[in-house]
Length: 100
Image (cartoon, rainbow, N blue to C red):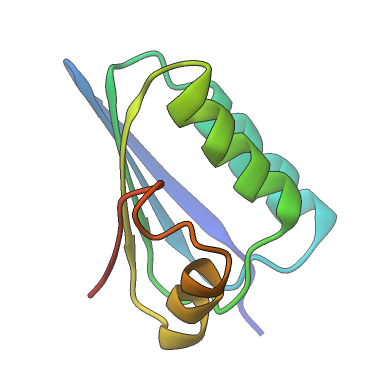
């Protein structure tokens, strides 16, 4: 079973986080939360390649990003189950989530 890995890049006004593997453990959530919270650029794109789940703490961090920090968020989800989760929570529009 693969563990979650993050690839973080920063290019001027834009930050990118590519999430590989499944967001499974408390450590995974903590690592992803810390990566999101460390962003200081006005724009953040997150690409979630494999995960079919997302913890409530990460969702809370994403909401804080858009509301408190006013970061322009763009999330690309590859897994249909994860996209459906976001859709059921009515977060697709609010967090700018696209199924790819």
